[in-house]
Amino acid sequence: MRRGLLLLPLVLFLLMLGFLFKGLYLDNKDLPSVLVGKQFPAFSLPSVQAGESVVTEQDLLGQPSLVNVWATWCVACRVEHPVLNKLAADGVVIHGVNYKDDTESARTWLRDLHNPYQLNISDPKGLLGLDLGVYGAPETFFVDAQGVIRYKFIGVIDERVWESDLAARYQALVDEAQP
Image 1 (cartoon, rainbow, N blue to C red):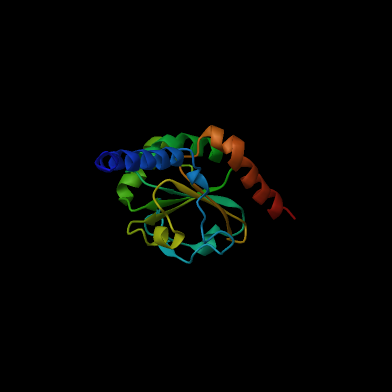
Image 2 (cartoon, rainbow, N blue to C red; image 1 turned 135 degrees about the vertical axis):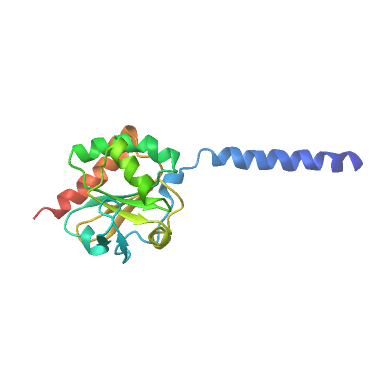
């Protein structure tokens, strides 16, 4: 009986280790978002680039786009940034949400690393991020021409992810928007 009690912590540890090990193989990229299928949240925030101009959800209408949540403090965003620059050069419409960041730091980043964003929204308090249900940066929303969120991707968009999964999703939105 006493020996069984001594083995109990080991058994519990091994069970917990098994659950954690299984979690390594779960796909966290497809976390559900309650906003998929809904209109992009209303907002009115300053632009990173222009400083004085205001960007609203109406500015996102008219063409399918990616809305990429990023920040200068985000190491993963730096990894993702060259891929976004390449996608923008290939004609993918990308808008940015500079999340909980210093606008001057964001301008320096964009000047030094190039700017893939057609619009770039400054969200220093993270209020738009909160409305979007952002877990952290980077996160990317696929938005159709009517401003409806169609897909949410959490994590770094690299060339492999773009080619294997995301390019087809974006192209479907583009094809859908064609008359």
